Length: 358
Image 1 (spheres, rainbow, N blue to C red):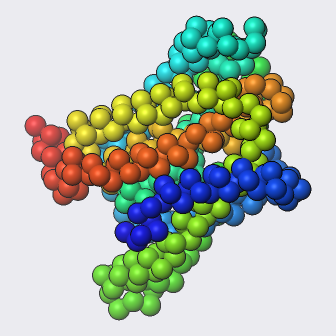
Image 2: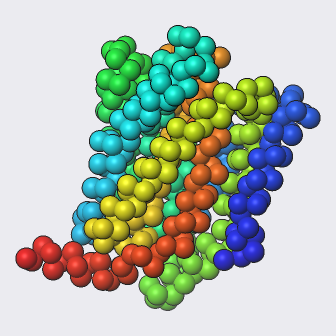
């Protein structure tokens, strides 16, 4: 690990300060960049996410995807946490904090929108950034791709019904442009680029082993792009929302508290389940990261569509973006330092096979 990666949290903190400062010093530039979007998907952020995701996509080996079924535990944990636990714990925390604990400190009649914003976040598992967190925790790129793809497929059918159930309404309109465009930009395009790059690197190699060496050498050279993309994304996100942070600091803190509990709590559930089930770390870490992080583009778009651009629900989803990056970096740090809690890949496969035989 380079010194740059070792002190990544310091660089992110500086990026946060730089983003807020940029929003105050050069609001015209920030507004121009923020306007470059379609379906609530910002194209500048999309390009930066390509930089983050591309190095990992080069490592995706499609020939090994056929063996994913041999390790179903990670997929089971991902599905249970994302669709049977996470949306409901987020709703429960929203009710607890904004109907009870923070009720005296918010305007009367606004608790419903705070809760709605949290529900919209909790029902949307991460699509793009999880590839970054997986790479930083040395996750299996093939398995991570399958986990994300499975979640995206389920989200198409389950997001609206779950949100409608928890909000108690039936007229939820999913912004399909945001959903489809985000999956295409953040998953399909970088994946195609990664596959083409991998084929070019391995096709001219004398052997499969040397081909893998060529792939590892290449990804090592382009890996700094991932960190640069992450820092630039943080600068933009905090630049876009700097005014909100400075104008409503107390509201931001109140929203952040239940979100922090949710993020760390969901990670603990998924990580503990993976550890108890003896899932290898390179599958367990991304598995927990997917459940912890959110598809914030979708949540923000739905909040704006249902409640309006300046609504409290939209603000909650934006605060989710601001809180998520520092939280996920802290979890990456934790996951990397607890990798020894998990079995090696070979041991996990052997245990799984012996369990099936008995």
